Image 1 (cartoon, rainbow, N blue to C red):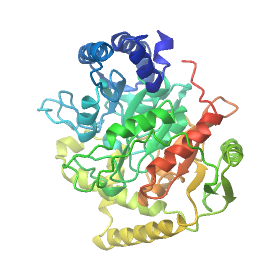
Image 2: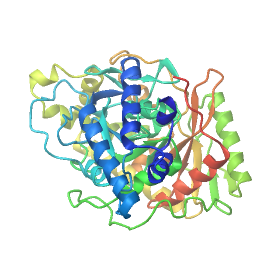
Image 3: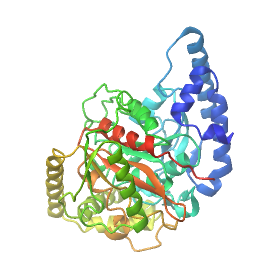
Image 4: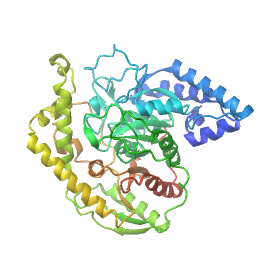
Amino acid sequence: MNELTALTAEQLLDCYASGALSPVDVTRAVLARIAALNNSLHAFCLVDEAAALHSAQLSEQRWLNHQRNHTPVGALEGVPVSIKDLILTKGWPTLRGSAAIDPHQDWEVDAPVTQRLREAGAVLLGKTNTPEFGCKGVTNSPLNGVTRNPWNLNRTAGGSSGGAAAAVAAGMGPCAIGTDGAGSVRIPAAFCGNVGFKPSFGRVPAYPLSPFGSVAHLGPHTKSVVDAALMMNVMSLPDARDWTSLPYVPINYLSNLNEGIKGLRIAYSPSLGYARVHPEVAAAVSKAVKTLADAGAHVEECDLGFEDPLDIITGLWFAGAWQIWSTLSEQQQALTDPDFRAQAELGARLSVHDIHQLNQRRGQLGSHMRQFMQRYDVIATPSVAVPAFDAMPAGHEVMNAETMLGWTPFTYPFNLTQQPAITVPCGLTKDGLPIGLQLVGPMFGDALVLRAARAFEERHPVLRPLC
């Protein structure tokens, strides 16, 4: 059973096509693994076994019809996938990690990504844990508890897509959907030893749009880069409900995935000019960058020429928190996470002038990086400056810009610039905790980022936790 839950989506699809495996058997194995591990990991906040098995039975029949009559099957036919509890899913409450949201209401709308997954034949397992409203880089929802790292249960899985990352790392489904507003796909993927991809803003349609604005992206958590490309083929399909989405490009993200990186120009920035990096993280990423050079890329160490934009991202984020807070009643506010309350209070202090200035500075950073990427194809950095730290409950420290994001200085700049960025596992600390390498591409260069990550992955096999 554990062997079934260790398979990637790519491997599952190959086995389904040959008749070697059934979606029903795989789904049962994944559900059994969730039942065995979720009480300790708190990765899932909702599991719908009946719906998942029904979906798997339909997929099994479609595969049988395909084998007999060559009828088409979906791009993710029979692959178990989980959905972060910020994303609307028809028939299931989307509580956003908050006791302030009433679960007893109509849940009759699928977000675009959920609808595309259903159309592709994916088996939806349930909803994964998030901090309240996705408000921080760790997952410690007062509603659903602290999500823990499968590599070490005393450590955080990261956030805000911590439930998604823990689920994939622990074999509780090979793929998951997360969101990334300041690193929320890449932080937990790096901490849990997964692949986590933040596409260009607008490449994956969203509905409703995030209250945190155009820093918020949707992206896949997977066991491999190939699986991330498979997911992007489905997730990037168009949906008219998102007026900020990019024009649809009928690209197959698998088609050039294995072309390699010979001749690519890679800017390696070990600190972005301002970050303090844990020595084991720095050493592992430096070694990983040598692997990229050995694969034929032209690597040049450099800084990117901008100052730490921490105050920009947190200012815009706190303003979004205040906007959400101001829509809640006093009774709802009394139920919220103290960290979210603190963010809202910080946001309330910002004037219209302050927010306008932050957006102007963001625009300057975006312009700077558009110009920088004319000289380079890819940027390489650590994914997160530190390994996974202790898992703690909400409200354990004072909330401010530094405690919120100061330890992840490599992720949030590329939310501000809206560039595609991926984390891939590149090693372990002496304590056995995963370390991530981040690769960033030019805006709209999603396929290029996946190709560069695949070139590294081929030379650096992914390890899995022994949970």
